[in-house]
Image (cartoon, rainbow, N blue to C red; front, side, top):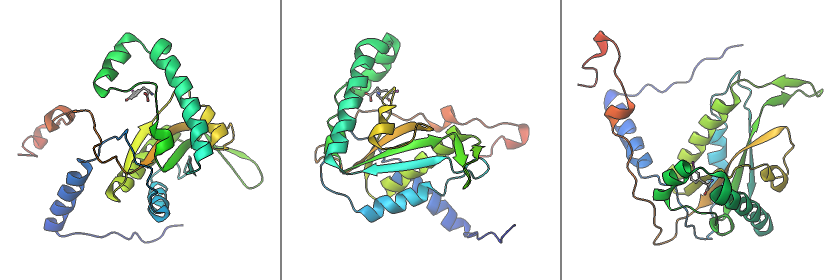
Length: 226
Ligand code: IYR
């Protein structure tokens, strides 16, 4: 069954402004590791999660689950487990090449922000969906789908004035227990959400220039960007 597409066609000037404004705002997004404990409005989190839930997904299977906690005991449990994993990562598992790549970020095994930040969102990937009568259906392109949904979630939170940290402790099976999710769901990432501390420091990093991330292909396309 089809329905009529609702599509808002913009004037060109409005298109240019919308694209520029969105980029200008997204450009200021930084991954934050120093959060205040100030609570954030639940409605903002709800709407950002609804936004994530609008993401495209393989066969519209929507292979994501977002578990949220503001509970200090749950946060502490997650912090302890994450720091345990990170300790083995930094002292044993990470190659020198990996540690060198991380050096400019100044990260280490200690994750105080997991306790401090007001909201933690555990993102889970569902390789299968279940019908009402318990039949297992395969989800298509779950990694791509959940990645897109997370991008939309991070963008929505940023535009609503919240800072995030995409944290991927590895392995992160402990997130299933902490967030009370079944083993059939894969922990995908832990999103830490809140306000940055007053004098929050972030690594001085650069994003690659346009020419390095974009190529223009085909004779007819040359000069497209002028
Ligand atoms: N998970 C570790 C290490 C780490 C890995 C990458 I790739 C980063 O971009 C940042 C950190 C940690 O959270 O410290």
